[in-house]
Length: 78
Image (cartoon, rainbow, N blue to C red; front, side):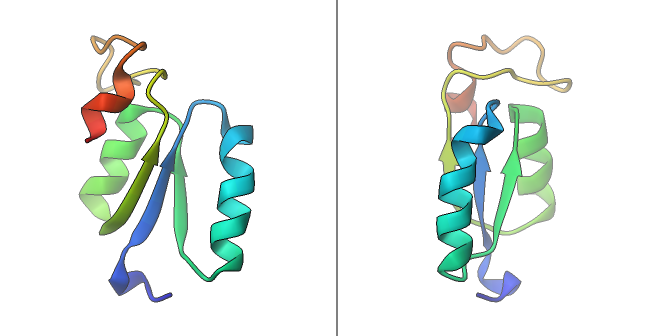
């Protein structure tokens, strides 16, 4: 799939959880990117067209968002 159509952003602080989904989506010719916290995900969303977001809810806010409660960080991406 061309990058002009956008990427699928997978966000989880435990990357092993995203690996099966990543491999499956890439096998179906989707372009995917992975982030491990809200800060990294926001940087990607500012620089890339994101077609779909798959996110964990309980994860760190990251360096740019240390005030975000890790029990709800994923909600800040939607």
